[in-house]
Image 1: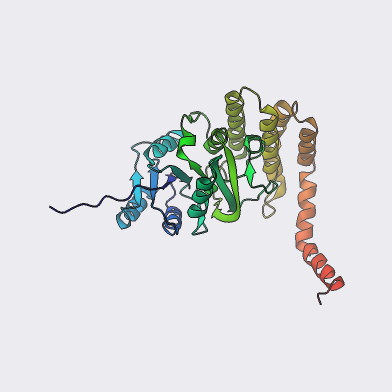
Image 2: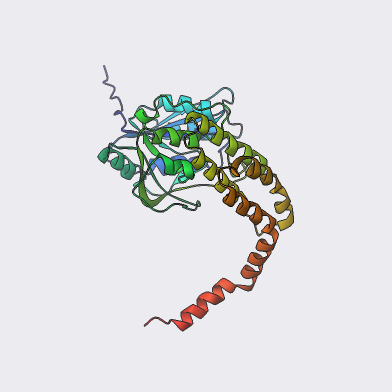
Length: 328
C-alpha cells in the first residue's frame, strides 16, 4: 500500500468570500499564496453562487494548489452573513485572516507578522494593519479597545486577523450587510485590537463593490442597520460612540468626485438631511449642524477645490516654500 501523507494542520486559515469577483479573485488568491510564513496555512474560499465565472476561476486555482486552497460552492445566493458563517465553520486553524475576493494583500509578511503579534500577546483578540486606498483616521496606538472601534470604522476587512475562539457565539444579524462592523465589535469584547503600523493590504473600490458600488441611499440604510444592531447588542451602553461613528460616515458620504458634474452629486446627497436630524442630532448636536452646514456649502467648496487644482495652487505654494527655504 502507498502511504498517503496528510497535509499539516494549519496554524492560520484565510477566510475568503467571493461573489462575482471574476475580474479580481486570482490576484487576491495569489497574494495569499505569496505569503512567507514559517507555519502552515490554508485558504478557505466560499463562493456565493457567482454568475460571472468566479467559481470556475477559483476551481482552476484549486487544481494548481489543492494542498492550500479549499473551495466551498453554493447552489444559490446565501447573502454575506450566511456565506461568512459557513466559511468560518470550515476554517480549521486557531487564527483566521479575512480577505474578500476583490481585495488583495500587498506585503508577503502580513500573515506572519499578525499571527506572531497575536501569539505574543494573549490579551489581544484581533490584529489589524494599514490598508492602501483607504485613509487612516485614527491616532496611532499599539492597541485599540472596544470603545475606539465603535466610535470609528478604523480598519478595513482585508487587514483583519483574529483568534477563531474569539469569534465563538458570533451571530450575524440577517438584515445587516455590514458584517465586518458587527464582527469587529464582537471580537473586541473578547480582547483588545492590536495594530501593526505597516501598510499590508489593498482595498479595491469598484462599481460592483459591496460598499463602494452601492447608491447613497443603500449606504445610508446599511449604516443605520449596523448602528441599530450594535446598539441592541450592547443595550444602548455605547450609543454615543455608535452615533458619533454614524455621523462621521455621513460626513464621508459628502465627498464629491471633482471629475464629475457637481450639482447632480450634490442633489443626490440631500437624503442625508433626514438621518442627521432624526438620528445623530440628539447625541451630537454640534457635529450634526456642522454636517448639515457642510452639505449646504458643498457646491461652493467643490468649486474652490476645482479652481485650486486647475490653477495648480498647491504646486505653486510648494515651489514658493522650497524657494524660501532652500536645502543646504
